[in-house]
Image (cartoon, protein in one colour):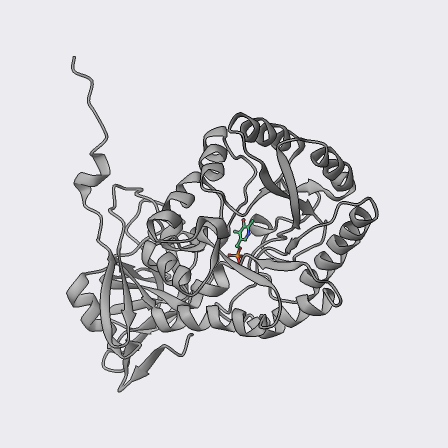
Length: 416
Ligand SMILES: *Cc1c(COP(=O)(O)O)cnc(C)c1O
């Protein structure tokens, strides 16, 4: 748990603001982010990278709320985007598009045009056919696209198979053995400018070894290219650093950065990183209210007003989120399956949790700042939660709760 969420007199607070008050004022379910926690994470990167030419490109998909993007933009961040929509968000949030790197396996021509118009820093290209398309699109606009190739270093990130991306069998990046040839090909294309090399091996990685191994493999390729006169300006080592949800012990940001810098000893290329989860995950929680307590023959259920559509990670990855009572003491503790109201057996938020609760009790689902709201859906015609950011004792509504009308505003019935 971030130190910015803490108990005082058995009540849970976010940066000194009572979560019970936030729930009463904004309703539940509601995402709560701590500005101080977000800022501190970013500073840990910049401090660890001080003295080194670098750019921290926050991975927008982890949490794409404009207030979060705007905060990082003001701290000097660049952005790692995976769609044209995310580029629009960066612009709307006041981000600098010249600090944007564009990742993703399926960039459309439209998205390429948009990014070229905005003069983004670099396209992280993932295939030979993408090189061809980008060369054509840039040529038609009279532009040169800055590119790096996303190399698949074939190292095992030792994480959940759904979020492991750097193995041969994954869809991401270009095969290690084909990388040099593709750089030669790109080098001969008139509307591309090679500026870097990129890799991203997965997410929620909790040891430094895979990062070091990937960096070393990428550096071998960089040296080969240099021999052929293809000199790179930057090296992008992606994101993927894990956080503590339960009992994981991931390296801290300074240790992670030190590992990367030790692999890069003697290199002068600008270092780009694309952290997502580690910047936002533990800076946010999802506030929910217990609707019913249902006593079953084998298990007791706490049915809450948040569900898998609001926070998909437990249903999708069977992942663990700590669940804390907003008020400790008072009610007697019981063991509960914490579940949402959605018509799916997979709609759970936690199994066998010991909680002192009764109907109307509030719960905080912790570590929900990353891949929470950004992966949410409207399944069961559930409007998505409000989002608030606490900041120096104040609370800001940074996204209004969706309304049902908004959900079907674009729909039409057939007239006859
Ligand atoms: C998702 C993603 C990231 C961020 O990953 P985290 O695990 O959230 O740090 C960075 N780079 C790319 C290319 C991604 O797809």
